[in-house]
Image 1 (tube, rainbow, N blue to C red):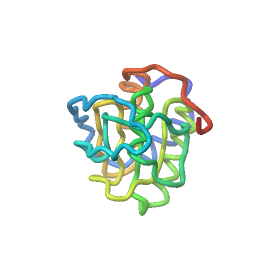
Image 2: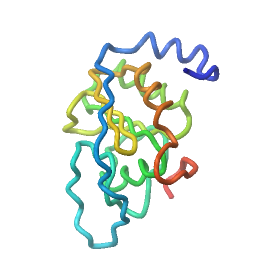
Image 3: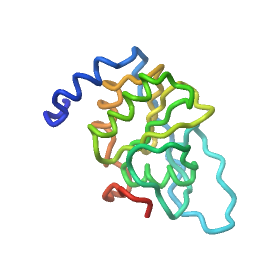
Image 4: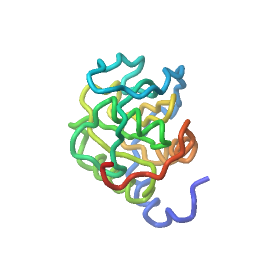
Length: 162
């Protein structure tokens, strides 16, 4: 159930939602080892990755203007963050809806562009993925409610790069 704190902002976001399939895919856990300096970047079994070996650093939560390296975002996933990535050429209305969504959810969410996605918008959490045809904020909120802070390590969501 959507929490009351989302209020009027949620109504605006739902109005901007695009229709899409909302089937959550589950993937095998690829482990959660920390990489050392000089280790090769792993080949992940999914695009974007949903688990696996990763950098010892993670990224801040919120909206990013640049893609987040796979080895960094996997560390975010391990800490219970939901990473919502979008095609860099996503229509402006959809991108605005995603940015607004980050402010509404305000914890354990990252919004970032990513070229080469298998769908225009993809949400990931530890070992799960949701592919969307656009900024279906209702589906993303449901995914966030089901998966945020439900990963191997529970950590506060960093608001600055650690």
